[in-house]
Length: 139
Image 1 (cartoon, rainbow, N blue to C red):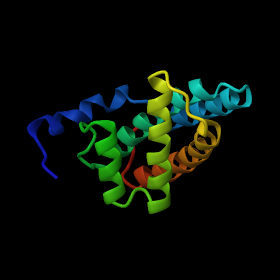
Image 2: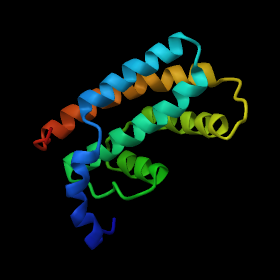
Image 3: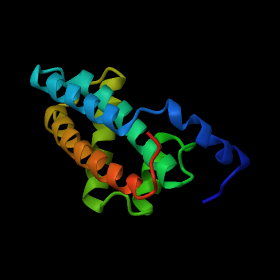
């Protein structure tokens, strides 16, 4: 992994990221969306929450990946052990569904994939919050 001088300035942006509590609240909104049959909207919102959670984890643990594009950041967090093989596979499948939905295509298995990823992301946020707490997270 290469660290650039820009990575050293990223800490000042931490206050602009959603807090762990905020991410958890947004996940509750996703559950409401799914309960109302708004699977496509939930898929798009879940991606934003996932992106924010990955960036918060990277910043609070001092992992210099937060400037990477989302997919590369996810791969790096998996490589560093922040996601299991199964979690990584579920996330990759979700990304495929998200991309189809976000670009106007149908995805026949979207409901199951989105619900599965929503459950996983709730677990990841809880785990990553604990992990980042060990690194003395700022509010």
